[in-house]
Amino acid sequence: MEMLKLFDYFRSTACFRVRIALNLKALSYECIPIHLLKNGGEQNSPHYAAINPQTLVPTLQDGEFTLSQSLAIIEYLEEKFPQPPLLPVDLDLKSQIRSFALAIVADTHPLNNLRVLHYLTQEFHITEEQKQVWYHHWINKTFSGLEKMLNAPTHQSKFCFGDTPTLADVCLVPQMYNARRFHCDLSSFSTLMKIDTHCQTYPAFQEAFPTDAAA
Image (cartoon, rainbow, N blue to C red; front, side):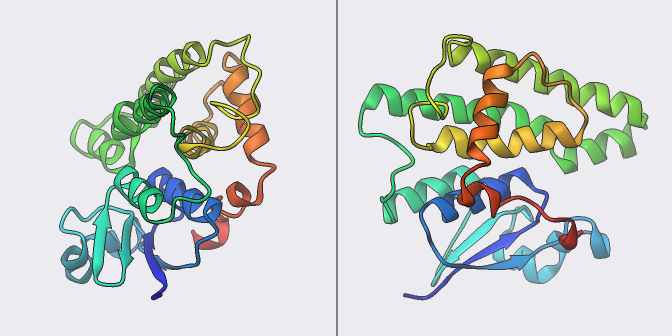
């Protein structure tokens, strides 16, 4: 089988999710860096635009097949490489996990990603302090809901939904990383912090973390 290729930016939470999923499934892959800040944004190059017309990361190549959007990529990996599963068989639980993941992927990340923050600063000339307020607002709103979704403080399982990692954890850990990077106060989200800390004891999560060497 031809090795999977991941077009990746080390700090992108979307790429971070895919790296975790690949690691949890013990899949070998070649990481091809696409730096979103250098050279005017390498995602804007004609070469990369031919691979991903949205000029976003991540992009996965599996032989002749190319796929973008982190959640679509993870679902593709789940279908093609079902073990270990990131989604349970039970329909109710599977749907709840997807709902949790989408609260991050669809509701929070689009508001706080790099291109939106750049647009706010470049087009509306907001200050760094205002940018922080914007970022913190959406993190707090989402994380408050996620804490309630997990029935905190009675939540007992090691991960978001049970004692094995699922799509929910794959999405949570990168968003927690980014929240800390933007100096969000996470003290009100004890359940999310507990789960995040536990996830980071697993090599699949540890090895997916961004490194300063890629800056």
